[in-house]
Image 1 (cartoon, one colour):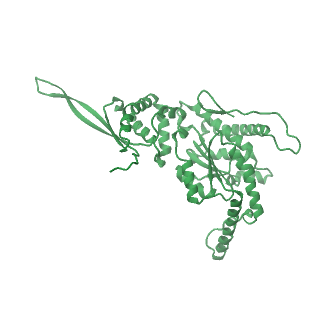
Image 2: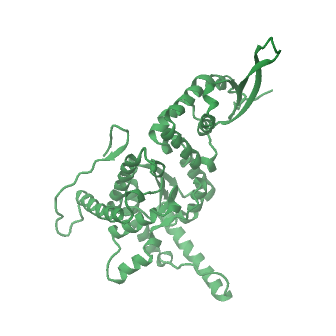
Image 3: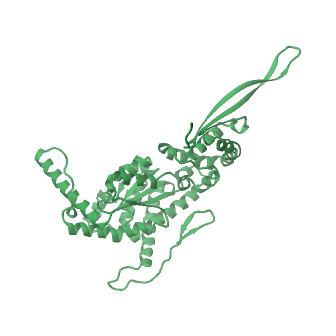
Length: 415
């Protein structure tokens, strides 16, 4: 159950029961939650001892990608990364479980269970290359991992509060978790798995014959219809249910992946279309929410823009509020008047803009709302008085800020 505290942050209420499982019975959900708390606490304390509180800097945005076998998850990962401007390679749990540390556990007779998976994952997420955003493939897959993911979010919120107002505040930003599921039905999944098996055999035969190229992995499930069916059902009963259980907590995106790749990718674009209400700190968004939201914003500048706006809220909250008031009261009536043309010009001598950072705020706020704004500064010498004894004219400098705002105009036909 999700509760809201006084600051508007989510805090997850979890119930821990002391019931023991009966013989030959699956663990109860309450017991799994208790196990998750114990596991997470051990991993978290170990990690904190290793890197310190200041070192617990996790990505601002996590896109947890899950998909049925044959749903095109591998095909669409790079597309999602490009769409979100993510330069780091995705974190693939199966690859983490093949790391030297995981192989060492297995070599000593141990099992790479939930605790080991969580430990490997959290350490990987602390790598600087994942600081802004990353795609996570293969997590969570169990009820315990689902609960640990919720606890990670809780801890990130607590860290953000702890470091608010410090020199490290910009390192502990409002976290955003996206759950994305690529889905195909059982028949389509089996057909795609077997097709991949046929293509793999043909490719590998050509590589062996020519000696050119690299061999593709040959999976047993890609050659046996029954194994392919079992793999799909395992996904449906475990991974799928784990991801769906987060639907009411994080941003959830269900993608029908049975359509052609072009249609699937258009669906992904619509699902991940930028919305400031999802990405900005709640206090920052509350300051800006009265400015009308336009349809689009330049995607490649998204992360940098959000970082700057959150910085204004932390470092210059009063000035930011003053600029927002100016836009709302002085510019929006003019913009609305020229809504058909998609172009508005505002001249002002507002002393607020004597501060360069205020002009930067103005442009960034308009950009965040989907407008394109530019400012020209015109200086004029205005006569104030004449010295009659010398004939000298005393002047003052007058600054006029000419603000040009461009946006998508009306689509009505123009003669």
